[in-house]
Length: 300
Image (tube, rainbow, N blue to C red):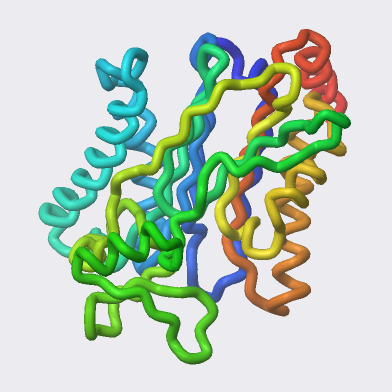
């Protein structure tokens, strides 16, 4: 494949400030010829770091090896998410207690750019956003994915029909998914990979998929982050920050967004910061920006 720097991709993955917890975020960036593929995984639960790491290893390979990857990407994405989830279940069955995904899981958001088209498949709330421009040339955020929050009306009705309920506990901030009449699993998202107990409460591993033509005149970049970023930063704030940098400075831009997210956690929460992952990929294909990327890397 070609050099990944040709894709002008920047990324940052920072372990948060959480007592006794490893970094549960993971990500991947793959460039093969004309294709760019990026993924973010945000694990949760006692084995969340294992689940997200396993996912980042397994999912891209399952996708690329799928015989319909080029002809029917939607089917390939759906299969790869399902197969990754099923791998968790069989791993749990054979691991003699070393791996357990009954109350652990991960978000997964995968963005692929190919043939002037952008594909986004996701479960959970690791949001993907396009930085595009309006008629006046101002940068505008367009959410590519819609967070799988339990209170989203379509998600809530699936959960209720499949044995779960959405409740907000006293003093708690997010809405969570519980088995009817129980106090678990208490998931703050309505879809994920893993979380085998959640299946009886309507949590699903099936990705939502969005396909969108790239508008070369207007679309500038895609930003893909774990909710450690989106907790205190809006999609619009994120694209405005990234747009201050040239395509050649994409790595600096990704780090700056991660830094800004960290700062806001400290301001809001004092001593707790969630794990933070940022992937930024420019969509243009002009030579100028490619040269910028190379030279800025040398000057670091």
